[in-house]
Length: 102
Image (cartoon, rainbow, N blue to C red; front, side):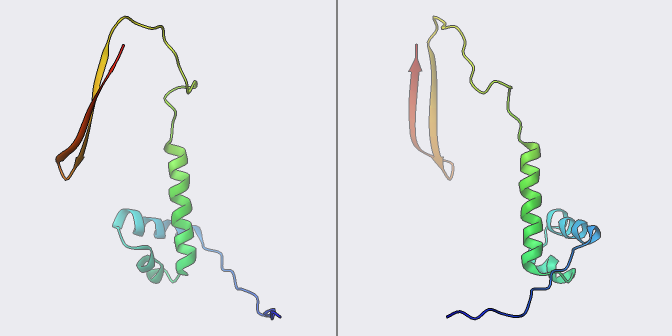
């Protein structure tokens, strides 16, 4: 059987000033989340959640499609197009392949 705990978790609301200070310390100063949470007397889990949510929202805001129509077509041309894909590791070429399309 499992025991239910009679203690409830204490949730502390983080003020806007603390949120801004945390984000500034992590992103502008480059301090780790754990160190910033210790400086601001925040729980690490709460600080980590705030930073991850901020990153996620920032990525959503910055992502833009090239156009409103994700798939586009154009009339076929009588040209041959060739391109080469080169795989490199550490600046050294490992593999390369040339593709030719009519």
